[in-house]
Amino acid sequence: MALLQISEPGKSTNPHEHRLAAGIDLGTTNSLVATVRSGSPAVLVDEEGESLLPSVVRYRADAQPQVGRLAVAAAVEDPHNTIASAKRMIGRTTSELKTLHEVLPYRFDNELAKIPRILTADGPRSAIEVSAEILSELKKRAESSLGGELTGVVITVPAYFDDAQRQATKDAARLAGLTVMRLLNEPTAAAVAYGLDQGSEGKYAIYDLGGGTFDISILHLHEGVFEVLSTAGDSALGGDDMDRLIAEWILERCPCELSGNDSEATFLRQLMLVARETKEALTTQESAEVEIDMPGGEKWHTQLDKTTLDSIIDPIIDKSLLPCRRVLRDAGITQDDLDGVVLVGGSTRVPRVRERVETFFRCEAYADVDPDSVVAIGAAIQADILAGNRPADDMLLLDVIPLSLGLEIMGGMVEKIIPRNSTIPVGKAQEFTTYKDGQTAMSIHVVQGERELVTDCRSLARFELRGIPPMAAGSGRVQVSFKVDADGLLSVSAREMTTGVQADVTIKPSYGLTDAEVEQMLRDSIDYAEEDMHARMLAEQRVDADRTIEALVSALEADGEAFLDEEERDRLTAAIDSLRTLREGHDADAIKQSVEALNALSEPFAARRMNAGIHSALAGHNINEFGE
Ligand code: ADP
Ligand code: MG
Image 1: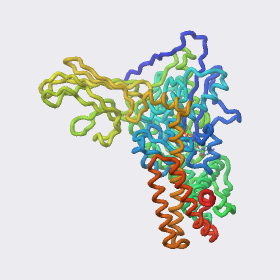
Image 2: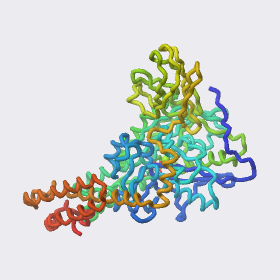
Image 3: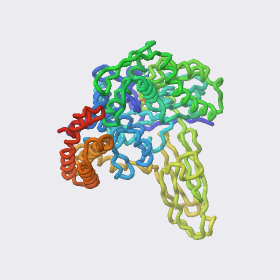
Image 4: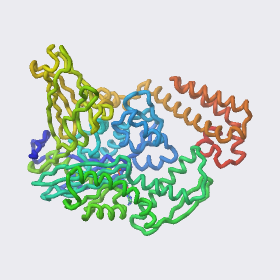
């Protein structure tokens, strides 16, 4: 296929003016910002000299949100208001998040049908807003270290991100006040960081194992341009899974009983942190000390050595090799056709990962650029080109679309218009005919996915073409055109060929925020309208109510029979039921009073359990709620 050079809008008219541009790696676990200064790319650090910004935001009732390490530090004590992994949720609808809901420790507001929001002490927040906080922090960092306002940024996204997720990422940037010049696929950015687009010829695999996601791509470089041949991955595989397996390994050995209450969540979170620290220590050491604060307060120690770690994490590496086989097959090549493999993501620092990836691909890994920064560096180089700071003959990159785009046809079937792995930008058109005699309108349903049935694909948009002149079935000819721009965003138009009537839609995915909604969010965050205050109070009271109910229900299950007589139990159960009913309403004060009443009523129960010295009593968190 002939590859075209893309001419970019927004190139500097004055070649001597240097525009401040930055590349941002908005990661699931960590985010970074980089820029090109005096011709060489570098990651920007914060006041403490740290380059990685943990992608974690903590919302507080009457203060600015905390972003990064401060938020991470608070995660154990304030899990419900401390939001990590927003990238997993961005661009997803409530129903798509159903399965995630069960594993994430947040409380979701499901009333707003389309954009799921997490209830925090500062009101409901969507993944877009959480990401916007992270982006704002990076913007601040960049502008203070560059000493001026950013003209534009390149933000990287996983190659498998669909239209909705890409659009949502752009929305987050807009909320943060950033101008996005381009969304760039992460593997492509990594290849750019290694300069593989500068004269190298050949095929490369980009293996990206981060905190919670795995991404593998095959890139083909030829004649100075390069093309993404295929992409695959696993959106639920990464260093976090290693941490989980290590935590399980520790749990099997440490003499602790799990009690199933809130303090257990705190204990498990600690366990995960210790597991991660141990894993990271073993990247440079042969053996590491594990120290755990037990639920009872005492400390417990053990050792973990590298060989044992390797055997613990091997299943995760095995799992990553399945998509690796798939991309080779999709690209129609074998390992022997590869010229190299590029390692990306913090988890590729684990020596066992590198070793097994090299064995699998039968070639040496590129690992000179810090695997944490490589994506941000590549994005910075692209940003520099797009801002017009480079000579015009520098080539731009070509990516592929990760999922096929198509239309619903009769019988709930999908007709693919643009197949997956097509190089973007791309445009294709196809003709359809009317189905019924005298049909004057045609309903166009745009879907994304590989499956045959519409119900198995993701719905992107629906629109109607009206004003078709009445004709016999089959004689109205409607041409539907699909166009995907360089960011991977789709627009669709339909045109009746005999009359020329036309309808267009730029795909705002079904969850998508309208400009007005984004503006609204911006305004809301600036001036606290009265309803906002009320909504926030209501959300807070609901969170409080849920927490109280949950703790009491589990306490009743565990010890209700032992410490309460039937009448006492009935009274508590009735009080819980009435709080549950109030919680569904909109009266924040009533919920608050009911929570207080329930706390007072359950006080003797809490006291009896405490006195009995039961290990699983209303410890930690719950003492505050029931003992006050
Ligand atoms: P993401 O792309 O998901 O934001 P990163 O590329 O920043 O993630 O990778 C984060 C992961 O890398 C975490 O699981 C972290 O534990 C792991 N990691 C970071 N440094 C090391 C290290 N020295 N050894 C092993 N794992 C590491
Ligand atoms: Mg990453």
